[in-house]
Length: 92
Image 1 (cartoon, rainbow, N blue to C red):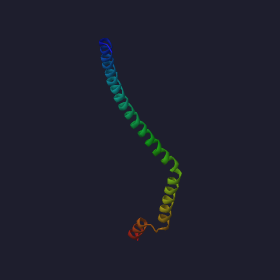
Image 2 (image 1 turned 180 degrees about the vertical axis):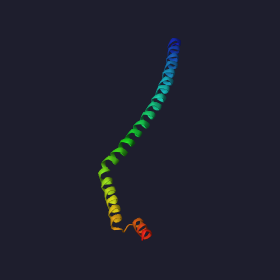
Image 3 (image 1 turned 90 degrees about the vertical axis):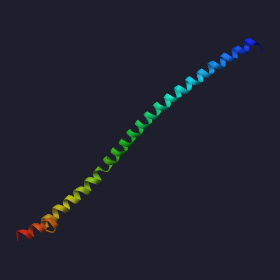
């Protein structure tokens, strides 16, 4: 191996080091971008799942609310609700 080949390899290794550093910088920014995108996707998935859960249980929750409301009206009309007993005892 001659001096010219040694100098050529030396400069080639310097160029490869610069390429490696640039690749590390690019990968660092890709990591940051992918992290931000991943957090955004996770947030969107969370909101989508929460809204999907609420929508799918809307009719069940509505039925329970209607039953509770109906029971409250029934007990008020029968005079067996605590509030209606208090009102009736004061008016008597």
